[in-house]
Image 1: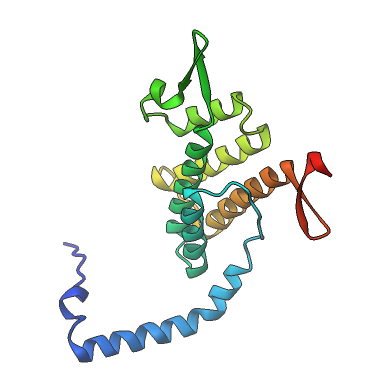
Image 2 (image 1 turned 90 degrees about the vertical axis):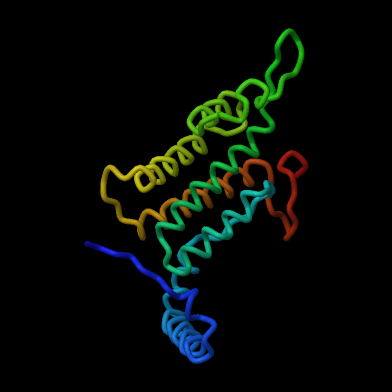
Length: 189
């Protein structure tokens, strides 16, 4: 018989145990600092003009990766990219008898990610390259959420972080350019 047991919440308020726990955590954090800093430098920089709720989720995913929580990184990128697509999906407009209809009125908030991606691509809210990257992220996420095969969580978590950064950077550079230290719309330069 296997048992998983954690009684931390029962003992953490005992002063001696609390002090010992704080010391252990501090020591572990200090020892892991070089690896955390290394992982922080593995993700390329990005710039985006599309800031939304997904941004907070993406920040959390980056923090998970820096801490070495690879499965959590994969889950959070999956959540962040789905939220990113949901936010883009708010721009999808349908017309019925010349009247605009919101996507939620048709799908009642039950739109699956694969269908959402197809609609975003069909509506030209994302290009083919972004569509492919989002599908790659979904496939990696699905490998861990619906585990039918073993994966390499460290490599896969960095891969999907980079894929999402590539998406953000490409969408920004499709519209803006940085000239003389200023962000300028491409059509205005």
